[in-house]
Image: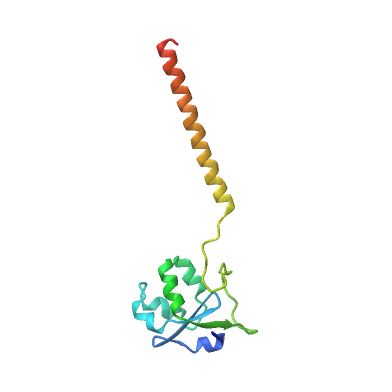
Length: 139
């Protein structure tokens, strides 16, 4: 069973050799990954012992990065009164990892509308071209 750690306990682990981070209220031990992090060790050290959810999600990590993160999972964050509140809302699947970006319904609707407009314009162009061909042949 995963253990629960308080924010104060996580904050005690902020050095390169002992580094915990929190992403979506899940605690990860990133100590072994500091030297391997593609963005450099400074990125992890800047959020060490803290809630790194916003920094993690802003970068847009790959599925592979999320799998690596899952392998470093050590427990859940137990929030207590007075702890810093998360800066972002969680769109997680319940396992501490984000499922995917929020879909903006208006953007999807706009895309469909534009695609439909292109189809109508193409059909109209074909009709006009066929009519011009018939006229030029005298039909």
